[in-house]
Length: 380
Image (cartoon, rainbow, N blue to C red; front, side, top):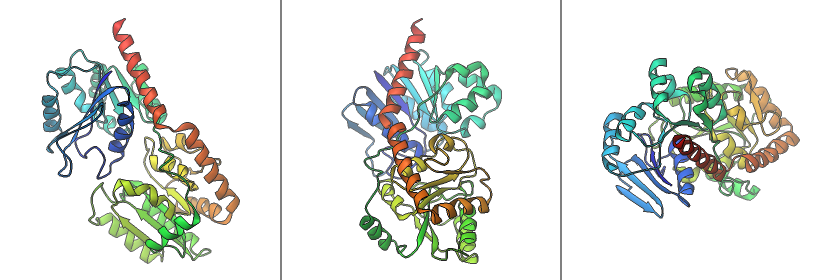
């Protein structure tokens, strides 16, 4: 099968500067290329060549600019080529342009969240959905929400749950964790870990307030915040300064690591005694939770969106229904802190859940099945 994948215009593949969508694309399609011929269109980067070839996988990189300039340049690069299926990643507005260039090729739209479909008017979204042969979502929450919004095209929405590399994200020894924590200067305290974009909707400020409540009984508690405002960005933003000032005011130690390359992130989970995802919007899936579970770290997360499919409440983690409440998060963190047996059970069951349910080759298999189903429908 010959597959064309059109990535968003913002970040390069491989994801050398980060980006959750780009990480997903790379993890899926380098595995897909073990059997199929895959061409990925991606954003150019000074550290990457304009074209890379790895066996059946080819990555073509386009210079930056507007979204319109990017998609036009992308289509120019593949003009005259034929594909069995085209997958557009998280950019529904690209669909009409790609459809005009490839009027007879099956097109699959991949949605990583509700964000970009929600930016469209209902009529515009319906017009776009009429032009695709299928829509694949990273979690069933996104698929179910889209089916309700667009019942005419409900049959087009399918799910391919995201995976985790459980050999990379895995439990580590006490000695490994201690050495890592000494390196970052956080070895003398109980660490509440946050990993993700440091922006208001991810809720780090809520976590600071939650830990301030617990500090009265557990003075050795602090936060480690891994991430930046945007992949590759090292500059401190106004929101980060706001969180830093809040932590000082509330006497909550917080260690910002700043931006780290994606190749380092799997190590950083072992800075945490508990991982907390206090997101305040409806995530499509939020891979940080499944990565933390795979790493053998107890997980606490907002009961929002696709997180509910990743974390089984009370078994592989704790879900916080009142996700805007610092006190609700403080209660959950306090349970894990004061009940070592609970912490061990959550960590063990989380790891088992990820190994059983979230494999990248399972994602690849489901995608291939959808490609075959689309081709089969077109032949009828």
